[in-house]
Image (cartoon, rainbow, N blue to C red):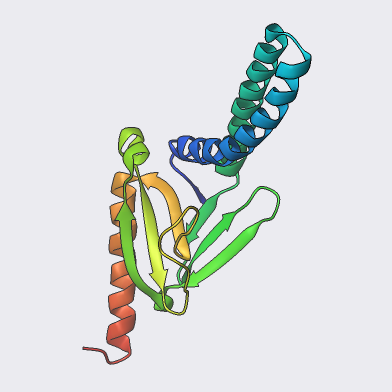
Length: 170
């Protein structure tokens, strides 16, 4: 099989993640610098600096969204799922089908608007908190077409059942 890219709507999910992350930094820098600027300069300088901060946030988020989207691939082979992601530090995951325990499909508000789903592939032996910002299952595919997400789930469920039956399960 060949490497597959994410749904184009994933750019919006990555962009919003960047906005949320950069917002904290923006608030800290803005408050600390505005106190200085208000004390030692006129109002036009303050407005220009605020405008430049907002412009920088938008540009950084856009660059992040494009780079994250262009560097996230997944591939289903005969024996496992391969996931490749990362901008600076690349992460390569190989998830054998026999370790797959469950497959969930989620659709947040952005996903519903943009027409994609996230696939969460839970595996045996992998533990990370299921909730929280940035916490995902080992086999997380953040944005695939809705129909393709259902096909992925059906494919993996068949692999799970085939493996379970070959081991003498119920």
